[in-house]
Length: 156
Image (cartoon, rainbow, N blue to C red; front, side):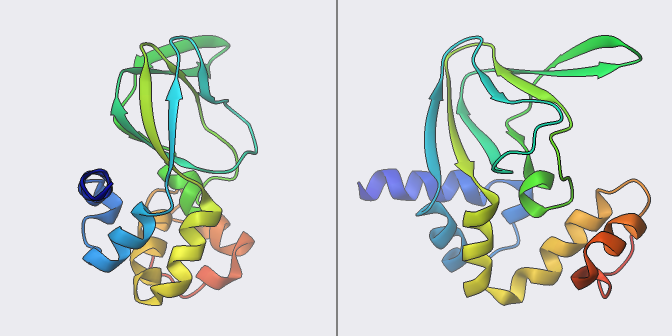
């Protein structure tokens, strides 16, 4: 069990948005992740859905991203991490559908879990707010109007 815990901590710590976080934060969030398995063709999340807003970290397997643009489906091979902006609250709905192309094992960090860990580590609030605002196309102006707590977050 200790080996699995350390393995999860290394995987979570390697994700870009968590790279600047201390070991205690990584340990806390790693202890609360959900481990899931998806069969080929099974859907991880659906474009436009209002769901648990979880971030997916792919441990093994391959995913495909499906997005409708100009009335046509566009597919591309997935990355090892997706959904971080939904977890941070920068996106209210999923921006694409993600499906397992092969047998996939994931770590999932729901927004509620992330917020619970953030409550114990308030020093990272600005760090994550900056990342979320930087990812929003208009520099976060519309987003800050919807989320007044981010009024003090710096613009890109």
